Image (cartoon, one colour):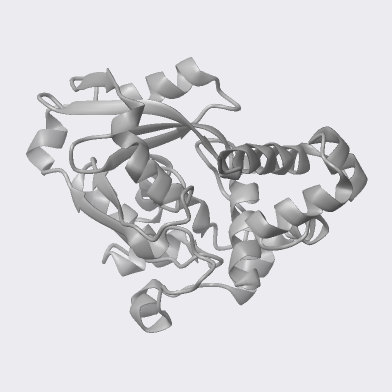
Length: 279
């Protein structure tokens, strides 16, 4: 039996502890909390995250976002030239997407069946939702609770029919999270207003380990004066992490907001940078 799901949960807990700590945690502290020997924990953490626990914590410093913006800024207009490949990327190359028609979105998802289920993710318990065409929702429950996370998703498409069916979603979720270690496509189904979808499509062009700004996104989609509207659309992204709204920063280098908490946004940026630089 593979240890992958167990290690996945262990590393998720470790990352959560690291993110919540006021000061860096020693290898011994983390290993003790995970009920593992220091050597075993170091090996599992390094295999999964790509770097040691000590190195990972360096990516969580206050200046990390500003460093990313200074050194890893991605001009979306040249994303194709930059390329999206890289062995350290878990999902970006393998996401395919299509968008719901504006008319159906305006009807609040009426006539649409949305399947849902809970899964473990690198950033805590995650609620995945999907239609027959792909993943349409992803919410995190650690900070807000499972009921609030579910209500948040349902209010986006209030007239849809919701059916609990994690087994139906599991192949897509495994592909998106890299759980099986297989290179398979993870289809996304974007449900939003036309302007929102344009913003989300722009976010999908930002490579792992890089960031962009709200103003750059506005320029890219042909609405340079709509920076505030872009920020709102980024915040309304229903497929957190897979549509990487956490890679959008303010022009000053500040993190800006994040629907599921700034600590999680900071952890996502650190985790992705570690993976990208280790590849």
